[in-house]
Image 1 (cartoon, rainbow, N blue to C red):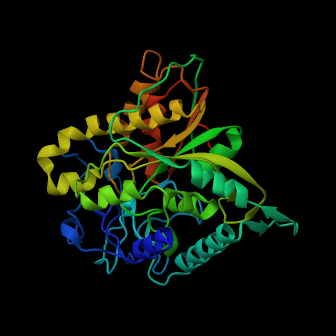
Image 2: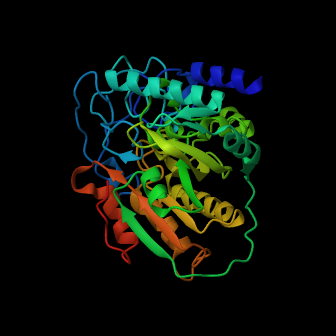
Length: 386
């Protein structure tokens, strides 16, 4: 009962500070952050005076298509420059808080309508507990969905104790894959970091949004698992701090039954998800510039919490990425550096994982966001996949 009503409420009302530039979102809740529909024009310099890669280059895209970010259907963890002209959002999800228009896919466009249709079909599959594979076979997923829902748990905000672990040689990769492409390639028991909305389960998933979280929800039963962790969203709705908190939701063995193009798979594949919201650096710079210097520390603490949960749950393979480097406007070098410090030899999690992939779908000129991760993890050459 709660989950159904909560889902409807989230779809109708969303209160996060916008992670994306306000653009035809659905569900916008006003709030102090939401009322600022016009952001200052980005500069190539950060608030601290250094070069800020994530401000990047702006682009214009075709009317009726992805108004903010041109992202292929289903791929989702793209990093792209913001749209230059940002009309006032009539409604907005948190976007990362990304929003019901997601990476700009709301407002009647064919892309948005297609993605809404996929989301609706995904919800029907979850409710029915099965789907038809391309060859006509019925693929049961009810038991796997129920187990994933039952196993979903929120950690934090207190630091999660890290159990002892046997160290191994870690292989790092920085690729152009989506999160789910990387997870399928790794196989086995793999956890994917979900670049989450702090206040709305699935971000703008139900409304055709385009971002990493929405893509994960369209392809899997992640959304219904998130509805089991209402305390994560309730807390962030009640507290307006754009830094958010070190709360992390773990959803184990969630069945993934679509590929990145929305096509149903021959069989469902289990993937673990770590749902965590990066600080909304754009809102921090705009509304509390005196706190900008706190961002690197907040990113480090949040990344540590994510990795702590991963170790606690016994994962040895991780898919990470440019977490919060899109419309949350975190500096990619800071995000990559936070993970580097924690995962490198001598770091708190040095040797904790066998294989760590940073999947970054970067559409900035020169792939400057992805290059920040390549510089942070030079052990592996950049693999151009996807």
